[in-house]
Image (cartoon, rainbow, N blue to C red; front, side, top):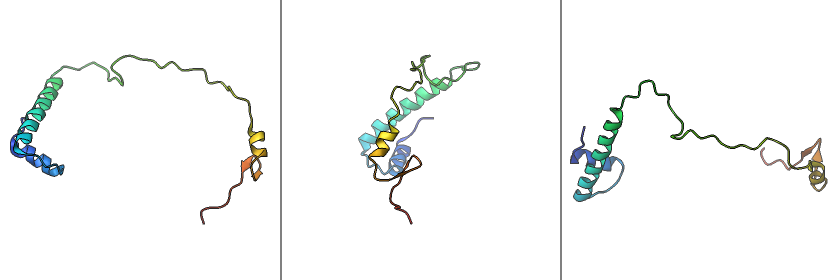
Amino acid sequence: MPLNLDEVRRIARLARIEISGAEAEKNRDQLNGIFGFIEQLQSVDTDGIAPMAHAVDVVQRLRTDAVTETDRRSAFQAIAPETEAGLYLVPKVIE
């Protein structure tokens, strides 16, 4: 269903966009082109085709989930102002 100029002006007003007559005609042609392409896509028979998340069947290369750093928690807590039971103590900020 192609758009007419009144519909394009109404869409522009709803979007709070000020457009001139020439811009309205240009936008009408562009929107009608987009709608035509959508109709063309909808006419394709997609029965039996599974939805895809990506156009190309890609697999992420993941590294193994292994610890690469030594545990330095005790060194970090040694320089902290206050700690208790392995936790950092901070001043209360919410009453």
